[in-house]
Image (tube, rainbow, N blue to C red; front, side, top):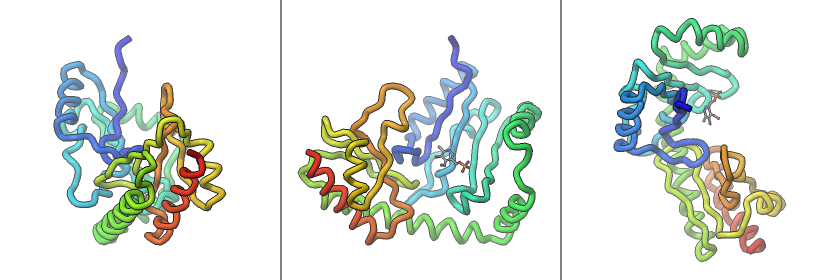
Length: 232
Ligand SMILES: Cc1ncc(COP(=O)(O)O)c(C=O)c1O
């Protein structure tokens, strides 16, 4: 059967923190245009870059065939439950129907609060502060991993933005049993198997570096290393 659409998360994706390269974006957009394949581009993390903004969106390369999803959850407050989309005009009646079927309406009060925050420049001042903070916390986590996990046989990526990094445990060490041990020592992570649509790599896990301080990150990575050492 022909695919109906493709869903992609090109920037600092959840769970891996990976970012799609410019070459891959161009290739995906070209195939989508050639095949008439609609793209759903989910971009809740795109503003959280560390040193440079990510490459241009997929939607900008295929505007008539894309739905771009944005969110205020990661840059303002998740509790507002406010996001937005950019889509071809012809889709509007169907999108309206789907939104009404899902929750009738996003609170007008929340929409007005966000409109003010956008208008008065708060977001423009706020986003650079969280970029700098998350970059510092990510660097602290990477340094702590280099220090604490040396010789244990783990590997991980170096995200250029977002909230997460992705860890490959040594062969045979599974993340779910490791979680119990880690929680006993005061540190938690999300086992990677939760994120697979098909057969899972059970020796993967997602670490978040955004809600913990540098001190907590250092303590947490040391505790995780102890849990791993005891499990090997
Ligand atoms: C892949 C993905 N899409 C979207 C969102 C944002 O969702 P919402 O705007 O409903 O908070 C998140 C946040 O958890 C996410 O990880």
